[in-house]
Image 1 (cartoon, rainbow, N blue to C red):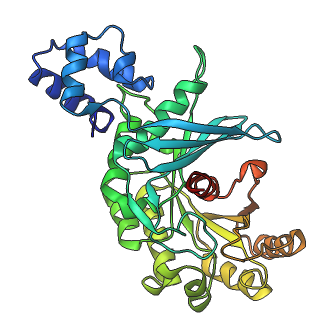
Image 2: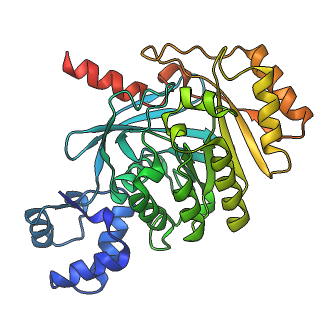
Length: 348
């Protein structure tokens, strides 16, 4: 299946020119795609063109909403998306005072194998294309926008998958997302999460991309990080922080370090002091995260008192930090949990 949403405006214009269409047709079709419409919903596009595109294997969007679940606690909405090949991914729309943030997936599954994550339990199935990543934003924006307000104002690449493991598609997505002809969401309103693929972090900066870089660190010691995150067998903590500093120096964007608090493993006073030492003098921020329980992993999250003690040590060492607010806890908020349950239920 070929996706029109994989194409930039200029690429779509060239395609429609090959179909013998007038210049204005690209603007019409692109506008429909931006508003989350499939080919059959494009009422002002000639039916013979729609048929030719479909006969040639084209569709407008890369997915559709299979199910959605709304939190009764904070209004967070979790979406299950059906891809054209039958795979399922998920995303989360979180509502804040400053706007609506959509968490998107970049891969079906994940190859990174982090011990606390549900997304990686089945391994990596495949990469998403740029258009499949964009389609998540387009369909949710269409469901939530009105005449005065955009439905999605901010995007975080923190769903299933390691974004920098799908580098080419993710960077094309960033360009499509920020295109003036499209949603025109600034790259500065995008956060990209990585478990620390150092050379890709450096490449991102060198190629002029400026999302907020969010680095999953989760441990200040190499031996501990290797137990939690297999990627640490390739990159040391020092290398990851060094790449983060390079990104900051090149882009001027403050880096955020994610730190999931695991009881008895990475929540000790020793860890807090070492993390403070490593980050001293670096213009960064630390997000301390309540661990989402994944039954297959068996890891237990740290209690509030342990997290608060850890935070105070960072504060006392002048390390900017917060305890991240947990949202959507009543709709299986952990990344990968809802997708996994859906697949298991469908197989019964």
